[in-house]
Length: 360
Image (cartoon, rainbow, N blue to C red; front, side, top):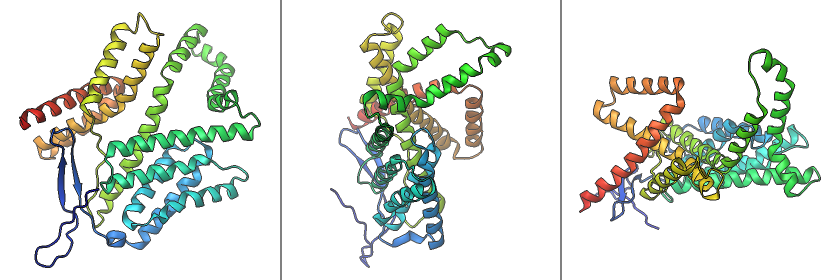
C-alpha cells in the first residue's frame, strides 16, 4: 500500500491532519483523505473514552433480541466501537462485543444472540475506511455482507436449538415475526371492520406476492442502510469530539457503472413490468433497481445540499433548504425520495462526464 507522511521541513516532525486528494487518471475516483498522528486518545479525555466503552457495551448487550430487534442498538454499538478504534489505536476495543455476549448470557440466561458478533466486522471496516486503507463504498458493502451473514447464522442456530435444523426450520425462524403479525391482524379483523377498513383476502395475497418478489432487495437494503448509519455515527462522533486528527465523512459515491445499471433495470421494469411481471428477468431488474435506490438517494440528497451550501455560504438560505426538505419528507416522503434518487443518478452522470471532458 501507499503511505503518505507529511513532515516539517526544518524539524522533521510529523504534521497531523494534512488534507490531500486521490484521483485516478481517468477521473473515475476522487476522494479526500487525511494524514493522522500516532498519539493515543488524540486529545479526548479518558473519562469520555470510558463512557463510550460503556455505551458500546450496553448497546451490544441490547442486541440479545436478534436481527429483528435492536437495529438502533446495533448502529450505536458499531459506530461507537469504530470510533474507539480510531481514537485509541487499539484492537482491544473489539473485545467489547464478546464481553457483551457473556453479559447477555448471564442476564438473559440461557439466551444470547450470535448476531452481536456482526458489530466486529462492521466497526472494523468503518475504521479501515477512516484510515484510508479501503474506500467507503467497499467498507459499506463488506459491512452489510457480514451483517446479513451473521443474521443468517443467527436463524440457523435458532433452528438448531429448536430441534429443526433444516431449510424449512430456518425459513420458519425467519418468517416467525410475520406469522405473529398475521395472527394479530386476524384477531383484530372485527375491529378493522368496525373502523371501516375492509381486509380483502385477494388484495392481501397480491400484496404478499409482491413483497416476496422484492424480498431479496429489501434484505440487502436493510444491511446497507444499517452499515451506512453505523459509519455515519462514527463520522458524527469524530466531528463532535474534534479529536486530534481530521474527521472522516460518510458520503457515498456512486459509480458510472451503477448509474447505467440502475437506468437499465428501471427502464426494463417500467416498460415490461406490467406485461412480464413474474419472469426472472423482470424480478431481477426490479430487485437490482431497489438495491441501488438508497445509494442514489443519499448521493442526490448530499449533492443538492452541498450545492446549496456552496452557493449560500452555509448561511440562512442553507438552513431554509434543510427545513424545507425535512418538511417535505414528513408530508410526502415517497415523492421527495424519488426526486432525490433521480437527481442522484443525474448528478452521477454529469459529474463523471464533466470530469472526463476536463481531463481531455
